[in-house]
Structure formats: structure tokens, C-alpha cells
Length: 631
Image 1 (cartoon, rainbow, N blue to C red):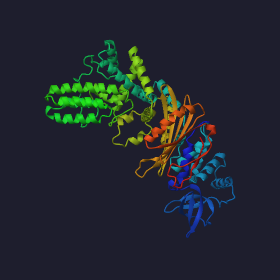
Image 2: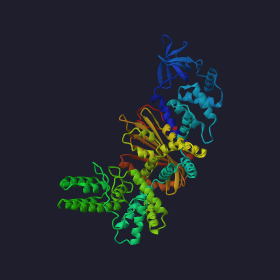
Image 3: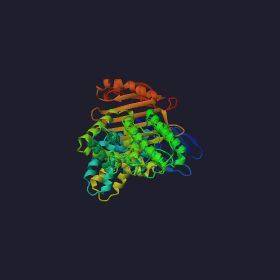
Image 4: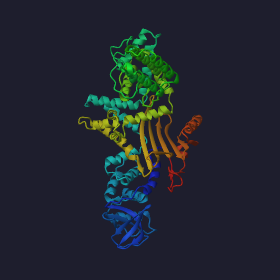
């Protein structure tokens, strides 16, 4: 069994579309409708699916008859031409379709008949030009695309009034796939590596971004290497050789200045001017102390106590020690010298505290979205740095550490890797997904209009850089094709995601690599939005499609009804049943903490999965039909 598309929820969404989307007709479109009521002057009420509208008919007709109509005018009123005679209830669908094909002078090919059959069932208007274009696509489908996938993509194009272009069609087809993103990325990376005509700065920027996607935990591993290196520098028992190695690796990454020595590596003599109205990074704390005038000590003490109390990355014991230091300073005479001594003591305590907490708070951020590494770097570099800059420092540190010939540095890297692996939990997985999606930049266009958006960070994301790459005139045809294929994948995610009234659907394809293990992961979320525009967390359906090296193809179907959660895992391997059993209790507890109730976890093989009636992701009292779901 191969789960090649996302049809289960898409089919469900299609059943709700007619009710949620207002019917809009354009000149030239054809559709099947039933005359419900006749009015004077050849006006009639026509029903198409669940919707009714008033239109003017070219010729008088009889109420109750069903016809194929073609739109001949839309202003000032809808005007319809009858394309076929009344549909007899005894007439087969193929007879109806043949009658329509003859009337519209369309070819009676298998593809054209499939198209008309599909749009009759969907009860959607479609024009002759759209049918001709769609038939061409169906005739030229590659082997890895099914007719049903193509029909779903064409329906979405017509339904949401997308341009009937090959680019949009290919993007929608790609957006429905649940595998292949890893291989597309690998092919692009290989061709980019071998490309010689590309400007070096663009090539390096792209390679760095690909590296950040391929290694979502590299920054965290670098954070541990940073903490361990600082720990060695602060350890009086460490040998001179160990301290020099630790200092040199930080110099190579640009974290410590080249002129730093073992005696002055944490010196405050090079503190740069920082303009800040609100204390955030720990480095700003030190600068504020040094720049405070003696007559403003009371304000300074208040600021420091408030910052310390609100710093979630510090333990209660560490906060207490810092507060004791602040109280002792407040009892001393307010002079420039006491301020400098106090700044040095605060710096040492903060560095020590964040180093101690780096392992336990690896995937944690404070209220300002800053991590332990962000605070440590601000304390060492004595300047405000952005998260993007800090990530670059960590990747540089990791690159130099991995390539180092020093056994101590290699040992630090090995220990950091092992700790990250042992720290894998829900926070780590959430972090990995966010990191990969952010660095892919799939929806970067939507963030450009946001005034608070970090344009520099957006520019470094992969998708905008791919746009720049396609503008290069000297790249090889192979690299251009691979770039376009990757762009099609990303655009497909956006186009396949959408909304029908309150119903929303979100699709994400994520190429993941954990500790040498690569996999394709596709998440499809279907749910509803509340009146305030926020997601209704009480009702949802989420499907995870995973392609893993060991477990192979796995599909997880999670349904939420009134905060009651049921999970079904589909996999061919019976061995996962005993492995999953002890995890159920942890899942139940974790859901309960978020005020959800677990009703059950079911593990099935694909061939044993029978069609099951599923409930739409809305309150059950609303009148929407369910769908059959088969993995």
C-alpha cells in the first residue's frame, strides 16, 4: 500500500464546499441544474447542488426537469441557454454525458468523459475552455500521478477560481503528495554543490540554509558546545592546554575577539554602546549597569530586580543569589568604581548560571523568545545580537568543532550530540518542525506585509533565495529544473491549503533529518475557525504521513471531537504494537494537561483498514454529511 495523496480529507472538504462557497457563474460555463419553479418573463429558479438562484431562460421549460445549462450572460441578470434536452431519470450518466459532448462539440475521449462525470458529481460549473485544458493534462499525466489526484487538483482550480495554467496544476499535484520532498531536496543540493557558474555569495547562502534545514538540532548542539567551552575557561582545575583549546574554538567562530587571552576573555573593557529602553538580553543588563550614573542607582536596582524576577531561564536559587548581589551593591557607596565591580560580578554570575542551565533548558525560550545561547552570546560579545546572527555563530562553532583535530573538542561534540539525542521529547519535535518550516520560508510572501517582520531573516529563508536563483541567467539547465521542482513543491503546499467558509485546511510537507535518519513528513490539518478568526481547538482532524527508514510508511489519523481525541496508527509492522503500549499512558497524561481526553489508540495494518464513517470536523448537530475514509 502506498499513500500517495491527501485525498481522505480533501474528499471530505469537497462534500462541504457547495454549502460553504457561494455559487458564482461566469459566461461560457456549463453545469447540470434542475428547474424548481417558473416565473413570468421566462425567469426560473434553478437548483445546482445545495444552492438555488434566479436566472432568465432562452426558451420556456418545464418545472422539475433537469438540464445541462450554459451561461450566456451575467449582467444585469444571469441568462442561461439549454445545452441538452431534459434529463430523463432513466437515462444513464454516460448517455447524459454523450448528449452534452455532442451539444458542445467536445471530443468523446475517455478523459473528457471522466472530467464531465467528476464535475457532475461535484455539481460545479465549468467552461468549455477549462474542459479542453483539463483533458490535455489528464492525457499527459506522469506514472506517479493518479487520475483521481489530477481530478482533485483540477476541481480545486475551478472551485477557487485559480488560473488554469500548467504551473498551478503542477503545484497542486505536488501539494497532494506525501513523499518525495527529501529526494527533491537532495537532488537540488547535489546540483547546487556542483554548480560552478553561480556567484559564490549566493551559493554559500543557499548551502547554509539547506544545512539549517537538514540539521534542525545543530544550533542546540552548538549551544551545548558553547556552554562546555565556557565552563572549561571558568574552571580553575582545567589545564592550560584545555583552556587554550576552548578559547581558540570560540575565537574561530567569531564569538570571542582574536585578541582575547585566558586572563581577559570576559573583559568588560570592550563593551559597546547599546540603545535599549527595555532589558531583554543579559548583555543589556551589564551595559545598563556600566552606563548608569551614580545618582540613578535606585532606578537601576529596580530594573535589575524586575529583570531577574521575570527571567524564566534562571532557577529560583540563581535568582536568589543575583538578588543578594544586587542588595549588597545597593548598600555600597554609589561610585563609578563600585558600578564597574558590580557589573563584573553580575556578568560572572549570569554566565555561570546560563552555562549551568544550558542542558536542562535546551529547547526553552524566555518571554522575549530568547534562549540560553542568546543570553550567553550577549554576555560574551557585549552587544545586542539577533537570533539569526546567533544561529550563524552556533553553526560556525559546530563546523569548526567537527573539523577540529583536537581530541578534547571532538569529545565535547560527541557529548553534546548524545545529550541532544537523549533530550528528544515533544518540545524537541515542535522545535524541529518550527525550525525546518521557518527556514524553508514556504509562506514568506504572507509575512512581507507585516510591519514587525524581520526582513533580513525572511531574506535568508530558502524560498526567497530560490526566487533569486531562478533570476540567474548562467545556471545550468539541470539546476534550474531542480530549483523549479522545489519551488513547485513549496507552492503546492500553499495552494493545497485553503478555506471554505469556517472550514480550513493546512498542508505541510517537511523534510526531516534526525541524527542521520531521513524521512518525509506530511501533516494535513482540517478544522474550523471561530468567529474571532482563531482556530477552534475543540474540533479537528489531523493526518500525519511519515516515510521512515525503519518503520517505512506510517499514517496517523487523529480526530478531535469536543476535545475527545482518538488516534489510529496504520503500519504494516506488527512489532510496533508492544512498543506503542507504554507510550499510551504518556499520551493520555500529555493530552489531559492540555484539557483533552484520550478515547483510544488503535494500531492497524493497511490491508486491514476497512472504510470507516468519519464525522466532519464541526459540531455534530450541524447538518454535514460524513465521508468514507480508507488509508
